[in-house]
Image (cartoon, rainbow, N blue to C red; front, side, top):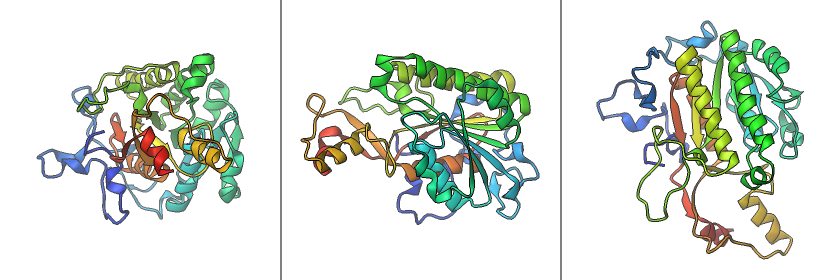
Length: 324
């Protein structure tokens, strides 16, 4: 992740009037948009917000007037999972006028109790994003879809790839078809794993124009979903944005993931385990910072763009375990 990526602006939480893509200031580029891959492909120069005319977006700039946002209905797929549930909690805190519905298949990775603090304010629907009829009904009743739903464990994808194909590819297809049919707006949440791996001594950084190079059924399914969204933007004018984020950590994360697995293991007296020498490097971002960036993209981003989200938090696994 380069210095300009979305997420760095939230460090310190003291910045005012921050914009996604603030790295462009002073560089002679107008309107701060990130993700030049759509330039020249027919996308108009209007910000996110046109999709919800009359609902509080002022002047097409994507800035919100909270007094008028009371009518905006947001469908959050995967909203009982780790990142999705944290998004719902964060959105209820910083955007209390949003009306939120959660669609979640309630697989092993979901935890409905994560939504207990907002249980009275959020509607929850149990179901799959691959269910065409259910998705069509829900999308039709909402203004914005925030698409977190995904099977996301690399090792599990090696044991049985089909759930990853069904949820991540078929589910995304059903969503974008419904969004297109009802002229709604979708933000598709993805991962930097679609770009593959870099050598430890490689100074290169991923950008939004980096070719996808997935290395597992999981990352291949997410790359496929990203490409579907991009193709629907270009072919059908889908009202969509995409974000690819680095590794998340934070509250309510499933214990199968690296950081909570090590923490719970240490609590139980289990010695931490490393793959190889533990030198694999990841960029880490707190889940709240990720979700703040997603909200910023929804409100201030440009339709048709891809945004990278990170926090310049690169650390190898050995150092992570040492810190824990």
